[in-house]
Image (cartoon, rainbow, N blue to C red; front, side, top):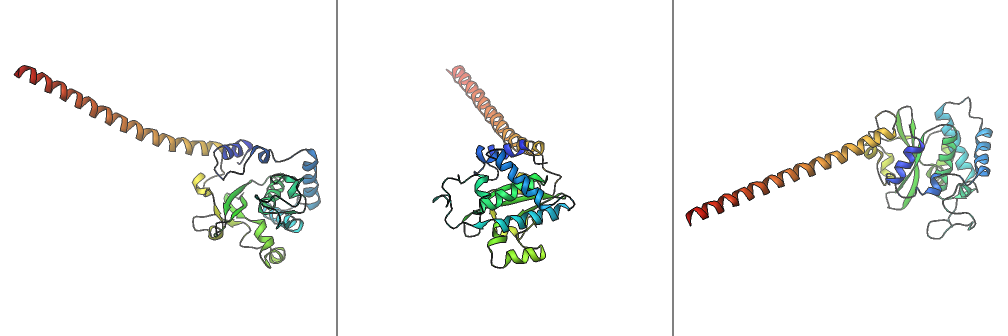
Length: 247
């Protein structure tokens, strides 16, 4: 499953983008924020719910408790300059942008053992955006709490019906989620999205196989080049011997 080791591998190899800095990867600034997240989970009373119901309730909590901060982006900073942009503190402050919506959802899902990770990408207009890939019951799904909250009428519809095109949209090659969400790296580039739960061993094996193929090609080309050189060299030696005999 997705472990700390796997997240570290994803971060180091830039698989999902470039926002996985060490300060983000460690997630929390201290026990104070960790306690706040624990308190949120406790107050949501999720114990008796199925995983999909937990995801719904957590998503509703996030869109109810964050409003979009139009004065916060990577170039201008945030309305709260004392809060670093890439911190869970901002996500808990009640205002944020897509990163903070996704980050808070990510933290809360992690608390209840639901595997997920942040995805860097853009919308179809090319504007940078962040959301989540969630693993549930052997499949990967796209979840975008920001758009659930900010699309007109989408949030109320989701809270009423539990359904949204931006909530747990299965990630297949023809997924409608990809019509509006363009990830830096598609998940199927990491591993078969219909495969068993992703593990660090699977990713390392896939990477090893791809690298081995490259090395095999280089080795074959090197051998062919060496053979051509040897044949050419033998040809020149024989040619010189014949010339000496004639002279």
